[in-house]
Each structure stands twice: as C-alpha cells, then as structure tokens.
Image (cartoon, rainbow, N blue to C red; front, side):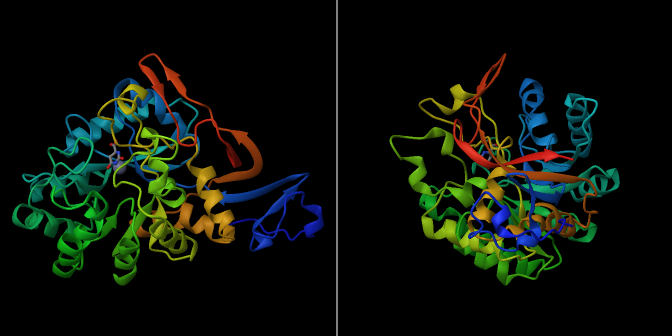
Amino acid sequence: MIKSLVLPSKALKFPVGKIKGPRQLRCKGPKMELTLTQPDDWHLHLRDGDMLEAVVCHSASHFGRAIVMPNLKPPITTTAAAVTYRESILKALPANINFTPLMTLYLTDTTSPEEIKFARRSGVVFAVKLYPAGATTNSQDGVTDLFGKCLPVLEEMAEQNMPLLVHGEVTNPDVDVFDREKVFIETVLQPLVQRLPQLGVVMEHITTMDAVRFVESCKEGSVAATVTPQHLLLNRNSLFQGGLQPHNYCLPVLKREIHRQAIVAAVTSGSKRFFLGTDSAPHERRRKECSCGCAGIYNAPVALSLYAKVFDEAGALDKLEAFTSFNGPDFYGLPRNTSKIKMIRTPWKVPESFSFSFGDIIPMFAGETLEWQPSLI
Ligand code: DOR
Ligand code: ZN
C-alpha cells in the first residue's frame, strides 16, 4: 500500500492544487515522493537477439513481471518455443535484477487444443495472443477466421483458464484505419464474449471510447483492457504536428482527442477493469524513419513517468497504484508484488536516443523533460 503521511501544503515546493489525496504523497525536502507496490507490464515486446539484450533492462529495472508478446520472426506458437524464448530473456538479464517474464503463445489457424493443455501445464505460459492476420508487425501468421478455425482452441482456453489477449482491429482494407477497433468490437469481440462468456479476454492497448464502453459493459474479472502511455497522452494530431512524426506511429493508431479523454477518464476512475500495459515496441531508428516505417513506440524507459503524469494531471494520483500494480495481477489470478518502487517528483530529461552496435532506438518523448522519476527501493 501507499505510505500515508499528511503534510501541511506550505511544506510542499510544488503546487498542490492538482493533486488529490495528499495522504498518497510524502514530502522529503523539496521533492515529493510516491511509494508504489512494484508495477508489472501486462503487454511488452522484448524482441530477441541483440535487440532483446539492448532493451530488456529498461523494463526489468522498473517492472517486476511482464507479459511478453510472441510476435517474433518466426512467432512463438508452441510451449516449447516459449520455454526457449523465456530462457533467452533470463540470460539477457544482469545477475542482480529480479524480473519474471510471463510468456504467451501466438494463436494461429492451426493451434491445437492440446497445445493449450501443454501451455497450462508448463507453468511459464500465461496467455494466448490473437493477432488478426495482417493487423500489425509480424502478424502475417495470425488468425484468418477466429470463429471458423479457432473455436475448439478457445473452448480449451476457457476450460484451462488461459486468457485470450486481443489485438482488436479488423484488417479489411475497406474499413477506415481509424475505425478498425470499433468494427472489431462489433464483429468479433461482442460475439466472442456472448459465445464464450467463461473465456478471460484482455483487449490490448485500447484506443477508443467504444473500447472503454465495451469493456465496462462486460462482466468484471472476465474482460479487461491494457492501456498504453501513448494512448493516454497523445492524440492523432501528434502524428502530423510540425511534419510526419514516425516515432509516434503505433498500431492501433492514435485516435481523436475525445477518445484519449475517454481512456484517461476510464483509468483514473479507479475501475479494476483497466491496467498497465506499455506495448513498448522497439524498432531500430532506420526502420522508423524510412519510406515505409514500422509501427511501434519505444516507451519502456519513460512509461512509469508518463503514467504518473497522466494520473497527476487528472488529480488522481491516489488511483495510480491500483492501475500499475493491483488490477493486472488480480485479473490474472497472480499474487501482487511485494517489493516497492518510489516515484520522485523531480525533473529529468529523456535521452534523445539509445545507441547500440546495431543502431539507435528513439524513446517516446525523446529529449523532453518529465517530472516523475521512478527508482526501485
Ligand atoms: O505498434 C505496434 N507495434 N503495435 C503492435 O501491435 C505490434 C508492435 C510491434 O511489435 O512492433
Ligand atoms: Zn503489442
């Protein structure tokens, strides 16, 4: 739980007007501090090879666990591949860091119910990811016909209490790219939860008020959603402000301001249905700044600062810890972390880029100054 200490507001050097619930904050000298149960990241792309080694510490230094996305080349479609991938993640970690990767399987038209049984028995696979074929990066092996091809697998998942994580966009090129999430809800998700109400579903990286309404309309504990920093802080103007901004391009693409506001209202309401999932998705700079740039925002180094900024600006810092650290494990039926992290309100500058032997990675909000700085206790 967050440490409580009520302080007279005159002792605070920062304006307190926007901050609700002063009990949540501790003041140490000129700095404000917030102590949180260590968060987990319920949607993360760690990649493999050199990229994995380059990025894993940015997540592992703040988060206790992460749901690791399976969209590698080739994708992680079997429990055996998930076990091997997990070992390579653990090997890429420095010895002194405690970080638990929670593995996922990539659903295909040919995934078998047997594979779901193996996955459950393995103890290392925690969910299955649905990528509609062609929806996003490395989704070409994804599902072409969920109801036609995957029903037996989905039934087995419901039986095994294995959640389905959904990239919620239709791929029909006739559907406007900004409407793909809404149409997916109407044509796939709504029918799915009606047909298989026992199946746990996480709608990943929601981007619209339609998704907020859908999740809120479902049974609590059965359907939930992850929310990224970019969909809380940016709207679609950010793609074009001052010229094309490839580092703000992700999928599902950023939407209108009214959608951003609906998502902020949902997460800061204290609802248990929404939890932290960064969708941090590193791509080498040259693959973003080119004639056909990849989708994906690298936010792992800034994610916690940005979530704190959102809750701070909404006057809802008292709701931050449930979003970052409770709602996710509660949904997955996993214990909450016991270690703590401190968020210190002190300005820090986001690096312009991170350089590696294979090239550079540009983080979200590169070169900008943020207010909240996380540090493990
Ligand atoms: O922007 C995205 N990048 N969205 C996804 O769904 C995939 C991800 C990636 O793997 O790069
Ligand atoms: Zn993702």
